[in-house]
Amino acid sequence: MHYLRTAAVAMACLLAAGCSHFAGRRPLPGYADQDHPSADTALVVCGEPSQYSCGITGVNQVATWEKFNGGKTPWVRVLPGKQVIKLTLSNSHQLNRQQVIIDKVEAGHVYRIEVGFNGALLTASYQDLGKMDSYTIHMPRFPFSPKAITASF
Image (tube, rainbow, N blue to C red; front, side, top):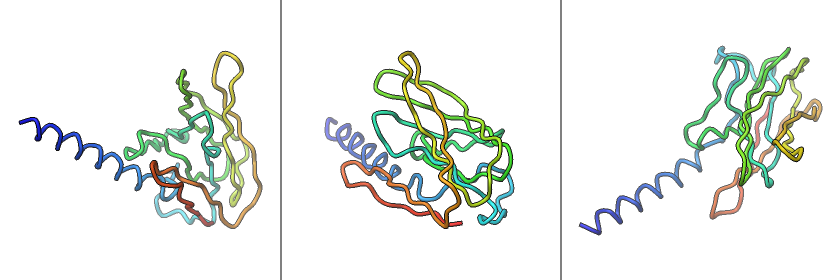
C-alpha cells in the first residue's frame, strides 16, 4: 500500500512540473476579441524574475489567470488606449494584489512591470520600453535553465 502513495506523489510532482513547462509560451490576450491582429496590440510583461514575483491576473474586466502556473501570467497582449492591469505581487514574506493604470497604450510598444518594496508593501510601476518588432522573456524551468520565448507583433 505504501508504494501506491509514493507513486501518487511522484505522479503529482511530474504533472506539476510538466504543466509549468507549458505555461507562458505565448502572451495571453487581455481582450475579448480573439481574432484581433497582434500588430495592433501592445505587450505588458512582468520584469525578469528577481526577489519579487509578479503575475498579471487581469486586464480591465478580462481575466488572464493561467492555471498551469498558479496564476502568475508573465505577459499579456493589450489593445491601445487606457488599460487597467491587475497584478499579484509576492516575495517570501508578503502577497499583495495591486493594479497599474496605463493611460495611453500604443500598438507595438512593450510595457514592463517593475516590482519594488517601499518598506511596508510591495509596489508596482510600469516602464514604456518603446516600439519593438518582438520581445523575449526567459521562463524559469526548475531544475532546468530558463527558456527564451519570443513574441512578435
